[in-house]
Image (cartoon, rainbow, N blue to C red; front, side):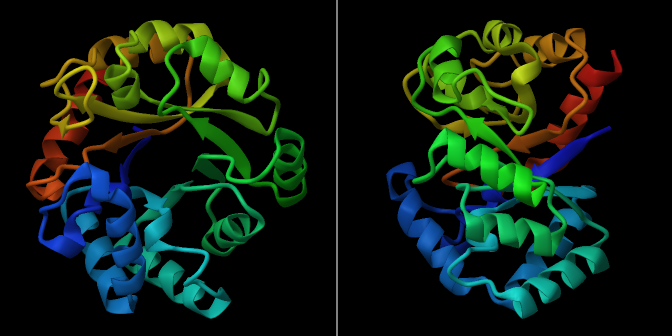
Amino acid sequence: MKIAFNTANLVARVSGYHFELKHWGEQHARTVRETDEAAWRAICHDIAGAGSWAVEVWEAHAAPEALNEEKAAAWKRILDEAGLTPVGYAGKLSSRTVQICRWLGIPCINGGLGSLSLADADTLCQSSGVRFHFENHPEKSAEEILAKIDGGSEWVGVCIDTGWLGTQAISAPDAIRTLGLLVRHVHIKDVKAHGGHETCLLGSGIVDVGGCLQALRDMGYEGWYSWEDEPEDRNPLDSAVQNRQRIEEHLAQ
């Protein structure tokens, strides 16, 4: 099954698994500073040790301001050593992040447009062969998500984040059905309550995770299920097997 571990789950790793969501930017910057070759090797082997074989690489772990071609080659060797396949890059679209994807063999970027226009994004993706999937956060409807990509294209689609749909009190299964085939990557996430973004074990919060997976199956989705749990007070690797198994159980039904 196409289930991946998103390394953004480890946002709190550099602070001993204690942080506040409002300080995400500080955690990102610290992760960039502290992710050397030894740290990246430990991350990859911990993820593989939890039973995952595919990863989505968070921008802070392969940052454009810190990675060059030589360093990227070392990152790729470590992924290979750990038996991990990189299937996505969670970050902003830019010429630099596209280059990182090409170095690491990553097929798509899932996140924000940054400073690029949609026309520039489409041109960059076509010329590089790296696809872009817009990830929802503040959007309050499927129609608003759709408007952000102007209906999408062959190269520009949607990365649906089910947790942020829950935060915005949107029915995630309904949003998935509305967006249809434009959903080309999925961040499967659960949150404890509408209006907040405290993540939790899949199926234990207010997001209809089972309904999301059913909606995706019904429309013939063939992309990746990149699960996310970015806790502020615990190590997500402790529940990694449970999260993966919950997705597997739903998909096997």
